[in-house]
Image 1 (tube, one colour):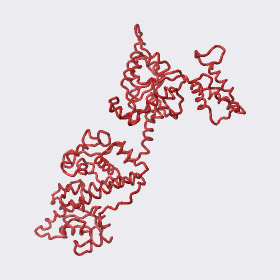
Image 2: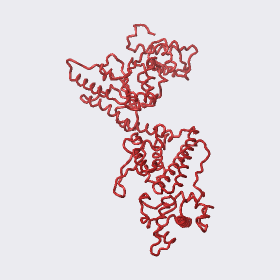
Image 3: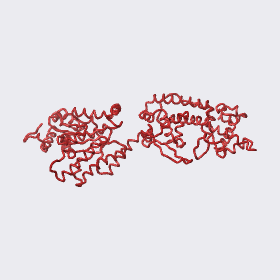
Image 4: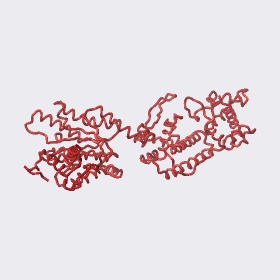
Length: 578
């Protein structure tokens, strides 16, 4: 408190330790000392009229000529005006201050506390956490605010603004150096880089973010206040308005938005704020995905069209043919940022995020079409909204056309409400995709054709990723075939693939007889679905024994039962095919 005591006790104020830092005359310094005395006595603010009467002769209203000096202190940022309505000091006439209350600003109190306003920067070291990084960024905004006040009101005090500019440059360089040394993910810094925000856009964003945390200066949300924050002169104010107008990067990218409010003078002003989803991703980055997931689950429970699937397997867990695997891997690469950027540049894609794909998985039953759809979703970090197409015919006759539209409308509605991009899976889509009836058609055929026409229209205009599964590709109407940009065949697994399937599906912790040879099971021509069923049936049979050991014969017995029950053309009378 040495500086404070020195300021209060020094007989001639111009000889006090902090006078050189004030950049004011003796009259202004005496005003500051008067208010400081009241402050240490427990009085936070002082009436201007009382201050002037106590310090100056009020006869013939001589004290009023000192209002201009008081305004100078407000402009320098040593005092602040207590007002319910935010006002710009440069627009206030000295006489308007007479019946208002004023108090010391944090800047002046810091000067009294430390004896200097020089920036005391810590050693260059990594940020311990995101909050420490935010602390520096919010201090950066304080410096911009102080420079803005000086620029708007006191052009002659160039020493003050030079000092602040030097502090700001030191701070911004220090932030950059500390970020480079920080291994931990700094959410805000990562956000700036992802959105490719320039320095002025960052300052505007941080100023609004500081408002969300502190709510201490609501006027900083106002359009002119934000522009003044980053503008040196009138020319820059005009130029920088484009940063907060329609079509700007900040508004066009959905980073910030504004509401129009009636100001005290009867005009309309814009008050800006950060969009809720952006704000949540910055303040609570670890909670964003979880909240979205719960919301989608809740909405799906309110309707009876879709089943929501969260797959437990990824593409690495699925056994596929080489061609099928290669096609799916190429599909996965569509989410790569460089690939997306390339496609947008060439005009092939119209948007810069997500996958636009309409896919048919076709092949025999049990070859893994549905499981692969789920696994693809897992690899893409998506959920699946699955619809069983066999349900459509169980709906009321005459309502089928409306119900086809309802499938897609509900999908878009769920995606929009939850701001997610689930995959639409249409299982057993044969009846939608089959050739349409022609010639002498019945009323039922006409209804079916109309339903297919609507489905064709929806496929044509589909936005996002759609997978349809079918067993019979040869029966698909050519009009549908052209609408799907990926047609992926699922063949019955060969011997090598069957061995891989057996090894994946067989229970790892189960006991096997010493002579058990899984390679012999791979000799039998089975699909993945059949192998999965055989393993389960065998396990149930073995589990009830007193000595539960898996033997080769147990599996062969179940294979025989599965083959006998399978109405497949490969079966020959009296023989078990391999």
